Structures are given as structure tokens and as C-alpha cells.
Length: 295
Length: 335
Image (cartoon, rainbow over all chains, first blue to last red; front, side, top):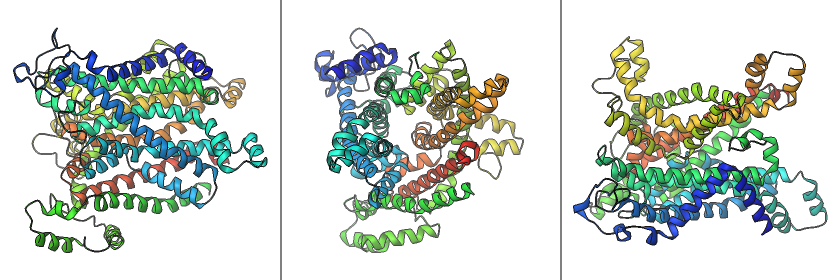
């Protein structure tokens, strides 16, 4: 617990990381308390054609959409979908990528070469292209989007963990533990994994932002959950035919995506500074580009 | 010699990686769908018609045989026929390639010409007001959804202000020329009105595409310059009494740019992926729109053609980046 407290106190001192943490906390609150915070919670499914395309005002904080539904309320429920996609897709990528990276990094044989080659192949195509192809082939739905994002994101973790594991092997403590007769499993899980945890945590935060951005693009292209799901990317696509009149319709979900991704990016940068003193020393610049003045 | 060895070693990996890529697209397009032939034949086809089509397309043969015959065709430059446009996919891609190249090159040139100097200045004047402003810009560039940025730019500059066209590449006939890059063709035929028209169509999509790339470049150039500024060889050069302008613009920039060059390679991937979404927003008649349309129409051959094309370009760019990296950084060569 004290380690967590330490990290939190360090983050609290870094202005941009703190902003990131606040943005993410706000997102989580919106997602969890959507039914309470929403002014028109029933509007996720109900239509009010008489009230369509109303500009922002007292009754509808962010205006209404083409169906007359309250955009603010729909955005809150959209936060649930966004968070769900990010958590499951990045979680699945972790579950696949981290063991692949550990094993490929620890062993030096043809199998580890093969594992890294496979992840290279996935990295050779822009993620959004591969994700579009997979999501479309499987059919547009939320689980398929999550699957497509997981299949295309795990290589990033595999690459990262692989590189970290390889560089760790030169460390004396790994060599000594191995000389003491520790089994490879014990060595990897108890000694290597805790030492590569920091970069994994940093990458997880940045990966959340990246995955949410790609998911929004898939939703925009019509590959996400079908309507009337209040998915942010899809809402932007729907709003296009009502421009330039109903500018709030397009603006609001875009700002929601922006703040969410920014939150994860800022937190990721902040975590990097706090968790990895090695990177901080070697890459003063990257660390300070996230807003601190020390370095 | 080291350069040659590196190129050869990377080339040796090029083929297996490409094969793996082909295998993945093959699985996605032929194995995952329950029955691709039914999709192609349409809902009203009779079972007999579906079977005939299956035989004609060769889909009744075992999958490994299908894969090998696909590879054979590919080697001869045959990507198959688009199920939607019924034209050879190579032709479809070739017609649309110049539009994407023009858009990507302009976006890349813009982000390099603006991003690298901004990154250097940001590092030299660290923690100045300009550095803080640039930091906000770079953080935003990586967090903004490019399709949304494109729509907002359309809303402001095309719909409200009327400064630029809403979408498309050009109204009316394209300028005469050989390259298919409208800016180049218009410049070569001294057709100034076409040049201006092409440029005004290009401005918004190029800006949309360039923004995240620009943000990445500023960030990495800044990081690279700061890192090099603290290295011992810079200290040595300072001690030798070299003027600081020479140190900065000759030695620091040269070392710092190695990481930026690597970044430009990765940038190409960002731009290529970005082009898919940006072209869709702006109805830009390039490869990206073609890919999205093909995917939505379940035009599997076209999707595979696009993936192969994109993957090959991306792998080649990475190869070039590695080579350039060694070529411009004397430290790498010395090893």
C-alpha cells in the first residue's frame, strides 16, 4: 500500500499527471454514475422527434440530437462503452502480450525468434487497418471491436516486455538467482516480472488512450455497436449531415474523446517519470516534456 | 560494408515477414467468414449458382492450396479482381495511388518542415512560454481523434468561413500531366488556377493528417536535442571552445536527428493509418477511401490487395529508416 501511496503522492506533485488523473477519475465517475448524473437517462433509448436538434440550453445542457435525445445524457452512457472497450481490449492485450514478451525475452531459441517475428508482422500493418478488416469480417458489434483491438494491440506489449527482459538478463541479480538454482518459471514470475512492471504500467495507460482513439475511429466508420448505442465515434458520424447548423452535436462527443485520451496520455507520461528513474535519467527530455521542471 | 551487411540481414527478414502478413490477411478474408462465396454471390443466388461460383473462384480447393495459388498470382503482380468494381485490383490501386501519395507527402513535408525546427527551439528555450505552448499543442495532437479534427476544420473553414472547399480533390478536370500528383502536374504545365484549386482542396485534409505527426515530431526532436545536449561529447566541444551555433546546428542536430529519422519512419505508419480515416472524412479519392469502401462492401480481394500494399510499403520504409540511421550517425558506423 505504501508504494501506491508513494506513487500517488509523486503524481500529485506533477501538474500534468495530476490533470490526467483527474480527467480519468471524472470519466470513471461519469461511467459509474451515468444514470444519476444524466438529466434525461431514458433518452439512451427513447426518441422525442418534436425536440430534435435543439441547441444547448437549460433543459438540454449540450443540446439534442437527430432523434431529440439529450446529448449530455447519451455522452455519459457512452463513457461506459468507451471505458469498457479500453479496459477489456488493453486487458486482453496484456494477458497475451506480457507472457509472450517474457518467454521470448527469457529464452534464446528459435521459438522466441518466431514469437517476436509474429508480433513484428502485426506491427507491420497500421493498427486501424487491421482492426477495420477484422471488425468488418466478424460483423459490426461491440465484442468484435474489442476482439479486433486486442488482436492488434498485444504486439506492443510483447515488444516492450521482450526488450526489457533482454536487458534485465545482463543484471547480476538475475544471473545469481539463476545460479542459485531457481526454476525458469520462478525466475520469470518472481524476479523478471516485477522489474518490468513499471514500463508495462506506463504502456497500459498510453495504450488505453490509443485504443479508445482507435475504437472511436471504428465507431465513426460504422463498425462499432449498432445504434441506438450512444458510442462517441458513431455519434460524430451521425452528426455530420446536420452540419453546420447543429455544431454542438458533432463538437460534444469529440471533446469527450479528446479529454479521455488526453487523460490517459498525461497519466502515462507522469507515471513514466515517477516509476522509472532509469528512463528519467537517460531521457531527461522525454520526462520533462510531460511538464515537470526537474530532470 | 557494415551498411551492406545490415541491408542484407534486413532483406532476409523481409520475405518471411511479408509472407506472415499475407497469411494473416488470408486468414481474415478467407477463413474467418463463414462462407465468403455466399457473400460474393449475393442473397438471391441459388445453391447451384453458389457452388458454380465457388468452383470458379477456386474456393472449393483446400486452404493451403488456395494460399499457394494466391501467392503465385501475387508474384506475377496479379492481386485478383475487385468483386465490386470488377476491375483488376492492381489497376484500382494504381489509379488511386497518386491521390494518397500527394496527400501523405504534403502532410509529411509540412510536419517535418514545421515540426523539427519547433522541436529544436523548444529544447533550446526549455521551459519558456513557447515551450509550454508547444507542449500543450503536442499533447493535444496525440489525443485528438483525427476524424473529428477533420470535421471541425470542415465546419469552420469550409462551411462557416467558406475559405476552402468542403471535400474532394478537385472540381472539374484534373491538370494535364504524367505524375498524377495534381500540384506537380499543375506546376509543370504552368496552370496556376489548377495549382491553387488543388492546393485549396488539399489544405484541410493535409492539415488534419499532419497534426498528430507534427506533434510526434516536435516531441521527439525536443527529447533528442535535450538528450544530446547533456552528453559528454557536447561538453567536450564546448570545452574546445567551438561557437555554440556550430555545436547546436552541426553536432547536436546531427545526433539528435537520428531518433527523429526513426520517428519519421514510424510516422509514415501513422500517416498511412491516418489517411484511411482522413480520406474518408474528406471524400479524398485515394487508397484509404478505397480500403474502407472495400471493407464495407466485403470486397475481400480488394481488402487483401490494400493490406499487402500497405504492409509492403511500411516494411520497406522501416528498412530504409534502419539504413539511414546507420548512414547519418557516425557512432553507429564506428561499431
